[in-house]
Amino acid sequence: MTPPETFQWRDLASAPRDGTRILVTLRATEQGPATVDTAYWARGTSRAGEGWRAADSSADCVILYAEAELMGWMPLPSPLAASWPEPMRPEDAQEDAGSGI
Image 1 (spheres, rainbow, N blue to C red):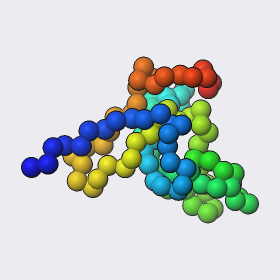
Image 2 (tube, rainbow, N blue to C red; image 1 turned 90 degrees about the vertical axis):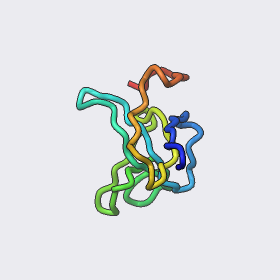
Image 3 (cartoon, rainbow, N blue to C red; image 1 turned 180 degrees about the horizontal axis):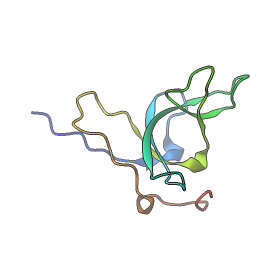
């Protein structure tokens, strides 16, 4: 039997910016707790600028995340992973430039 996948959050600066879909942790805000989403880096278009987009964006509704909204990333788990990862905790992140608020 294969051991279960271990989820390791990584610094956002190391995330691929080639269109690869990844998991990201969105920071907790007044609107709700930290969450995990699937996103990818996209070049700018006439409808939206360059940056991190939610994977469920469409041409008519682009969901763009500011760098300050994201804490960390990890590759997508294999389809055989037993569970979804917990959001990254603030104490796990090394802040380089403040909280971004």
